[in-house]
Image (tube, rainbow, N blue to C red):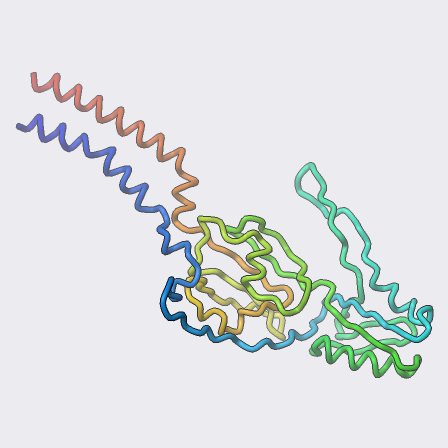
Length: 273
């Protein structure tokens, strides 16, 4: 009877080990977005935060285009916006060709320096407000100028458990966190969707952290739904990622436990004879 109980206990060791490994895997509920929206029936309306134009900060790069009745007259200003192709530094043996952003840098005083027109203070302004300020100053030198101001380096960094972690230059100012994650190829199966970290610079240059839960639709009504330049998004790995990384080690343990079980059974049989 004692021999049978020992063999029965040993036979359960691999099964218990397998259950522990499977328990760490993600469920479907953990990888779905917006779990609070029903699959069918009466769908609820989702509130959405109003868009607020981002403010220009020190070290931003602006594309400034001035159109005049005489195109050649504004050529000196517009030449500052020509993009130059270059080789971005790479830690690997292969270099990656990337465009080098070109435009007008907002200096430490919050000004842009334009040829002929001179300095224009733009820090703390939106691009539409900066457009009016530059237009007013340009009017002192040119008749009826038409000015366009856009960000040349509205960049967002997405790292962690996404398909294509990188720094992305956004095509416009009105970009959401869902847009940024889509550009990064979406979260991997191991990305933790209910605890994404967003780091954002405030007016004093400090990093303000936000925690984002993509399993709830109320993120569209939060101040971080629309991104700002230089936002940093980090997707934390789930426990399933840890289990996946340790799969080779888990297999080794399973094999070893089976071998130990066989050895102990053989020894127990010898001792009970």
